[in-house]
Image 1 (cartoon, rainbow over the protein chains, first blue to last red):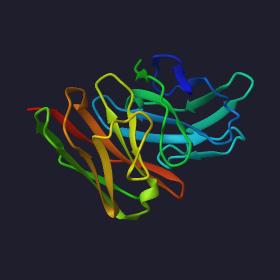
Image 2 (image 1 turned 180 degrees about the horizontal axis):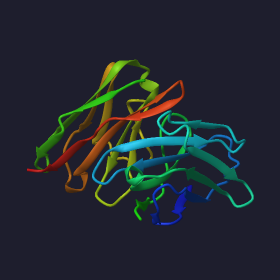
Image 3 (image 1 turned 90 degrees about the horizontal axis):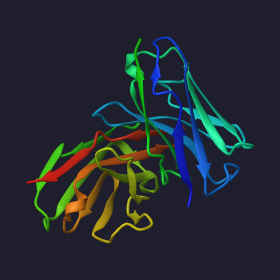
Length: 118
Length: 109
């Protein structure tokens, strides 16, 4: 079964770019049956979909993020990435990567807490 | 954009009770695109139900999903101690877009 692991800085300064990676094991990121996804959760709050990327590079983003977000896939490293620009305190959250085989998220990473603060 | 509403916000029950959680969509949706998740403190969400009524791999049969159109239900037939947590419904739209409900917290009475 697929296993996912998020990595990246736990602290980012305001106005900077948040860059996270999700390492995939137990399967190939070139599996055309998956979209590779990012979801976040503000402290004590609900879930917010950020977007997803296919291994062929096709992306779909939540319109709320569209101007700030970029997702990509690195098939050589079997991982995918999230970049979120111009971060503010409102981007403080736990960031999850997950697999989307059809219309639901079946495998999730453990989550990476990210704080935006100077 | 589809908006999902869940009720109640909190459900206080005892082990052995039956739990009924509701999820309403702001407009009619295909049941193929409705899923439910369980989340416990400090952990990632876990897929319970997809396609409104199909149990995910390894999910006990005390969990069941039903509904169509705008009204969907997650039922836990007999609560076990490990079932307490927050439950989210989720819709996948054809725009495409994904939305989550605000969650229902099931806690111990």
